[in-house]
Amino acid sequence: MKKNLKKLLAAALTTTVVLALAGCGSAGNAQKDAPAGDDSAAVTVVKVGVVGEYNAQWETINELLAGDNIRVELVKFADYAAPNRALNDGEVDLNAFQHKAFLANEIETKGYDIVDIGDTFISPISMYHNKNKISSVEDIQDGDVIAIPSDLTNGGRALKLMEAVGLIECDPAKGFVPTKQDITKYNKQIEILEAESATLANILPDCAAAIINGGNAYTAGLDPIEDTIATENVDPTVNEAVPKLVNVIVSRTADKDNEVYKKVVEAYQTEEVEKTINEEYKGAFICVWEK
Image (cartoon, helix red, strand yellow):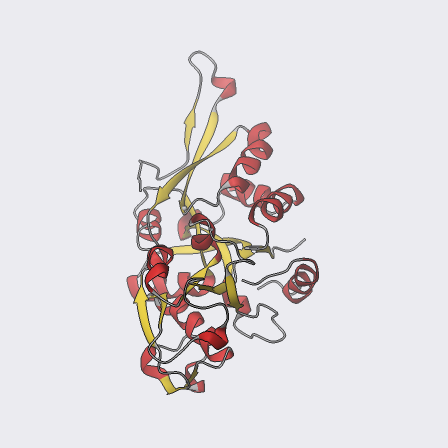
């Protein structure tokens, strides 16, 4: 985490109300496309794996990269399981869909030789409510079903949010990634349903609430303010897990110093992209790169 993350988040939190990318192609190294007979105009295409439909910032990035004859081509995946494998196997050049804690767990458990090369934003995880059943956390009753992400890191975040609003208590020794087995007390006798993050919005009608991250919620058409009843605290002075929750652009380790990929990161970390993110996503994402 950059040393000024606290300052950046604090500034963002005072101006933003936070209540809370399938395909593949041959990539390996970024490829060059050139019009017939015009080698001077060759364009380097960088394939970037993403999950979800929150991609307006990449249009801005392509505008900024045009002068360098670089173009990002998005490769969209349906869920979080595929983009790191695709990157590790050379099907895409970069990916941009995950936070640092998720990346670290993927590297540890699957042995991927990949590394983050640039910070992007933090996406608070929020509790979205079934408006036909409840209107607040206080309305949650014994027997109600709460859906949460099934992956370790986001599932742990969801449980910590439930703990913060008083629904459960978790073993403090497990830090910010407890599992259901680490729940030491149910203050309400709720049922916790684990499901792949991209499916949670579809499950919401059958639950009292679902805890969903900003990207999947936006893709599903949910509003990070109007449709939520609780959101994790992303002030790093309060939540020590925040540095691990910053989303990143990721490359293969062998390509971490690739000059083209560095230009993609530089284009992302600009005022123009920050403006696009703020205007398009209405608080679902908070930009946290060093400015």
